Amino acid sequence: MSAQPVRVLVVDDSALMRKLIPQILATDNAIEVVGTAMDGNFGLKKIEELKPQVITLDLEMPGMGGLDMLREIMRRHRLPVIVVSSHSTQGASVTLQALSLGAFDFVAKPTDVTSRMQESGQELIAKIKAAAHSRGIQISDLPEPIKREKARSVSNRQATKVIAIGVSTGGPQSLQYVLSQLPADFPGCIVVVQHMPEGFTEMFARRLNECSALSIKEAQSGDALHGGRVLICPGSKHLKVKRLPLGDVAVLSEEARVNGHRPSADVLFKSVAEEFGSRGVGVIMTGMGDDGAHGLGLIKVGGGMTIAQSERSCVVFGMPKAAIERGHAMRIVDLKQMASTLRALCSEGAGSERAMRAAND
Image (tube, rainbow, N blue to C red; front, top):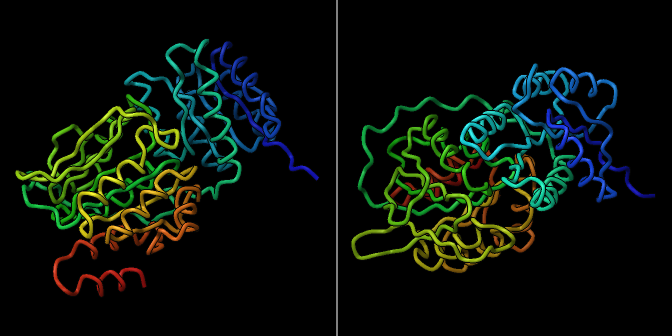
């Protein structure tokens, strides 16, 4: 007996999008569009009537806008919501706000909707399927992060460890939670690949910087890998790390996509393995697909530490599962213990391994 198709409600004030999105979703037999709505008020009524499993949501609508509708969905229904977002600066800001309110993920509308919507549509189909089978974990389910004082200046101290994090769906909330728990004097440097399109990562880095004691920015080629610093890979570029005589730096490239992604976690992890060996740490967190699983294995072979987020704390247990199944994750850690685990790993002295084990107990 075949599984029932995923029931989807499309909410968008654009008549064109209310036509295009259902047409694209109709190409996949595993998805059924049960209705459309032109604003938040109609959308909430349709949820009650049609009982969808997943909602696609435009944020810029008249009347009840997308954010207000999202708040009501989270309060009343806790259904997974995929934002269909504008590429504008304002669109990026509102989209990231939606993720912080509990949206499952987002798909950026192409600048040329009529000719490139098919490509975005395939991404939307994949995310709808992932949303329908997700664990529905919300950042609000986690305890309040510790409020930490911001560093007065960026330190020039050499990082004790270079920690590479690969993350996708569910990543913005999960990263915010982990980074907000780390103190300003954190001795490691963190480099992050978050699957996110161009135009969103700079705003994402700024929002993370506002809620963390660490120094967080979108990476540029030549950025130093200092302790207490976090570099977020820009959308549409790859991020690598390089050891140089005058100091360790980040390097950006526009090489071909890997695993369908640019940025790719595998590219970052491979460079950490090659350049830093036992000083490297690979962390693979919530997300769809298997990007990063191979690279995590390279870090392990190179003498570094490898960590996968636990299934019970992942929004989508795709990327960590792939790494664990291949035997590349040396440790499996809940999201709530991730920050304390990283602190223990970066501690200097012989007691660091004991401290790390204690953090996971």
